[in-house]
Length: 145
Image (tube, rainbow, N blue to C red; front, side, top):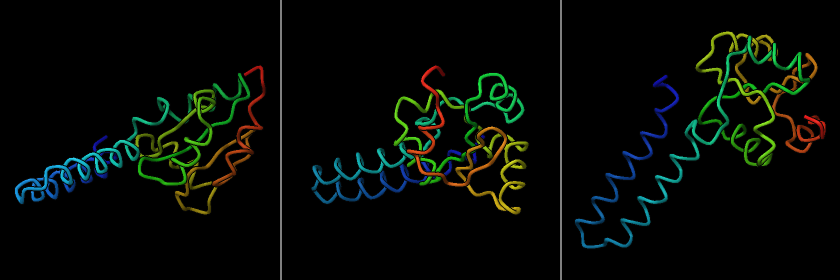
């Protein structure tokens, strides 16, 4: 669980340290702007911007029932973030599996990517697609889902 928070905590810590130095040198405006930028970066790289993750087994079961794709992701992944942002509100219609929280999800990703944990890996109808175009993923969502 703590592994996913390492990058966000590190970003806030670095931002706080540098902002404190700027503040002590009499530059509070720059300190505030810098700290805000680091907090924003931490938020974007945290698991908070992603829909709630479920386990791989549950995601596969739900996908078999409703036909929606399963997205295997991990915090701090720029490509996962790109996919999440480009999907917008539609992202909540997918089944998200955090491979750092679910060893079974990590195993699915390794099996699909020749042993590598390359994310995002999107599984549609049982077929894995590594780092697919967000527009293609949107097309996989039927209007009724």
